[in-house]
Image (tube, rainbow, N blue to C red; front, side):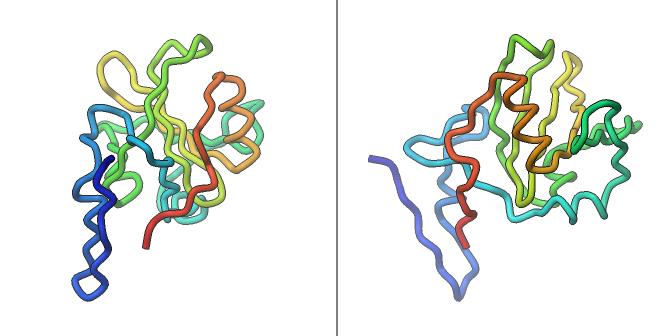
Length: 142
């Protein structure tokens, strides 16, 4: 039985995040994936996304000189779910967010290619990649 954690409102501390499994495991033992509080609209407004041709509801973040981590992109700490897919040559990293999701591809040089997806684009691409999330409707603990 794993540690469940507690929320201390006066301190603003959620111990379940402090004692979460290490980020390198890619696992959340006996827990559903957490949907980020970050919304599609917040990411859309914050970054210069470009539409992906012939992929409605999917947008790519243009290449930058400095790689952009999930922490910088989402403006918070997170652990993406990692997958390998026969339909992708690179590792696939997934972060569900409100109103959609991020699907990123980790290249051999560790650079990340981030895609922002509407709910329809997110579902369609996950099906194409043959990726099933445990529960994409989980809410973030307060």
